[in-house]
Length: 572
Image (cartoon, rainbow, N blue to C red; front, side, top):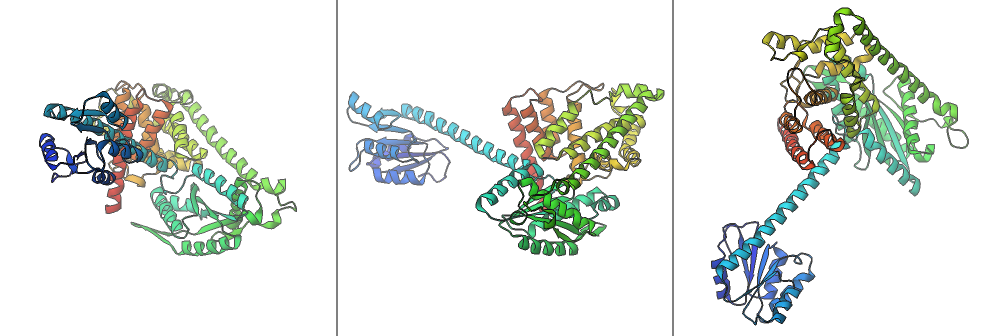
């Protein structure tokens, strides 16, 4: 046996050792490992231990001849598909040759062996084996990549918890199991108290830090079988299979007390954040559908917050009528009022945007600027559609996707107000102009302060020029420090720019767009978001490229994402 062990292995089987030595002398390939056996039993034992690319098998052997060995090989799953070349000195009559092929041989060589013929045949089968191994490696890599992508698609980008979309699948599954087995299923709706004050006082970077660490805290007090999800914003939902209402209440109170004492500290910022919890239970409250279980917990959460916050409330049984279901008035009052208020606020936002557009269109000095930058995004759906696709891919609530859309409209509107015409220049910016545009995020942020209902959009406008590697502006934030909305805005805006005609450059080709996304992943863009963008590009056919090319790009971006995560674990 050769000293250096290679992945490609060859087995020689002959009862005469001098024949094995002669064969090894002929087979002098530098990148294979050669094994030898002097009997059929020894050969079969080696085949169970090693993965051979090819077996050279002597026909005439005592106890068990080559035909019998081949027959036994075909009966075992591990050895069934190993190619066999018979080496024999017996008659060349057709009956013997046919018997060999019937036993599973792929070729026949008669003694004396021609070294050139032997090496040529071996080389062919070794190459076939290497191609097979390469295909298997690619298949496993694709499976691994798809598994990683699946995991990313069901997780919230900030906290790493399950996202809202995937939670709906798990909720329906657990509800049906509880119903079928007559077992209990409890639900927590959890809200971080006065979280808006955290963002307004300390900024969204610290707010994101609180959310991430709260998710870690929550995982520390739950079981592996419990299902934890970021429901939206500062709201979380927790499903507790096989947990009674009383057990859930005890856990909720312990959790509330622990959260009350948890100190969030990041650089110069320091804050305690309490929580409110609403609880519901399948066996106690008898929800007719899975969503009702969550709605019951949500209503209990309303009561916890209206009672002063930092407390735990159970859904009140007196709200149930004798049949065990909610009366129409009590069932729908809170949720209906909430939806009406949401619609009023959304309509107010849309009215403000429309008024701003009309103002700019009717203001003489702004008319040319307004026209030049093609502000009317309602007629140009590219960016909006991509936000829809990415939101769906990431499992984001529709309200959050609408926030991104409003942010891009505000961005274009405010560019007119501050007279930003840099997008129309057909030359590189000079140093003075570069300095000016670094002030634009602050200027846009200040404009949104006139409208408090655009607080979420304000965060996106402030940080959308931050880069994932920390090289952006205005604050040089890095990685997850950049709010998810700003990271997504930056990526979508860049994609639209690359695939649209601009005065300063032509539209990039599909290959150039992919190359730019791969190159900037981990630098300008969040590599995880780029991976999802590549999925959207492939699924929605946004670019004319073969799937193979997009898969290659995803593989490179995933490597960058994993490298960043490895660095973060060791340095941050």
